[in-house]
Length: 130
Image 1: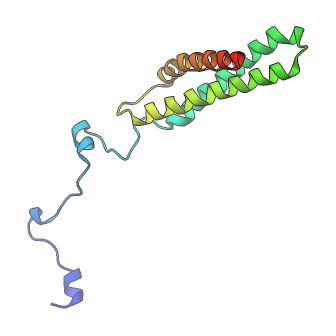
Image 2: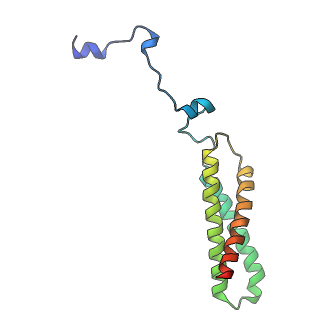
């Protein structure tokens, strides 16, 4: 049998054609483990982070600007809000990307906001103590 005839060889029975196997978790869940069901989960989580940072900054500047005698304290607070918005966005993006379900944006926001509040309070209390 020549090389060219081997290339033209067509399997006779369907049993000779092997389908690619999916991982066990994908077979169990009925999904492909390499795909993310929610499109752009990190982009949606970071959109929540930007909105939370903007609102927190506006509230801080609205309250603190009339008595803004300590500029470095305001800069430190803005840094706290930046960290407090990035960390929950990463965690939320990881949770959503690993979930086999499609998450709507409002559900991502409802998961992000309590984490943002918790991280901001913990970070601010740690910064105030140190």
